[in-house]
Length: 153
Image (cartoon, rainbow, N blue to C red; front, top):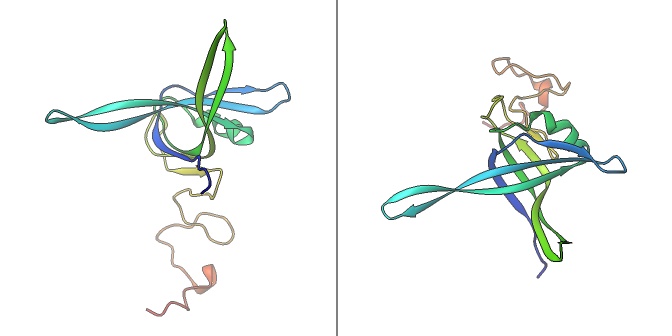
């Protein structure tokens, strides 16, 4: 059986994202996400926050940095990476989530519709073949998607 390293989280940013560049010009966007875990303590349910550091590399990090503000809800899909180093004679380590896909969700400082980045795009609206948004109340003709005449009901 093969090893698996896959993480999916939905949470809120604890601070604004920081955008930096490596020596060779690669963009690195770093932020932290808080995810609540509900557990029962006695007779009551309590929320227990967990905090995760997330890294988003490249063009995706540059593009999304302006939208990643404190309080914004995001969905993160990625993998765990452990960094190890020595500092003052002590071995240190840190585990981060390297995001492969990030989805902006509703809520937070800017609110708004949900948008997906990194994989397939999902902007919450329907699009015709020309790429322009179609109004929800606009009639659908057979030429828009080619499937309306093939539906048996």
